[in-house]
Image (spheres, rainbow, N blue to C red):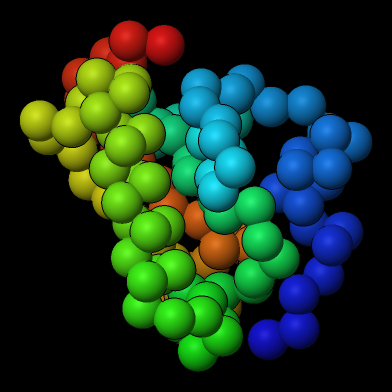
Length: 114
């Protein structure tokens, strides 16, 4: 799928749209979901322009894909929910993906530290 830099997550990365940031490094940005489905609902996005999980896997090495998931775990640990959380990655329209910038949801009933 062709990436469009007009999506909301791209706008957040470009600092044109604010977010409630909880973690950032050179690889990912993590922020609170504006419509949380649990006590903790954080989105983790890569800082590269990639629309879907399938695109991400096809366009990158296993090392890059693995690094993203390592970062999701690092965020979960940073916000204090690594002992129990659900990670969801929707892929494409048929997979109920709403924003076409790869992202992982971290959901937990535990309240985050941040």
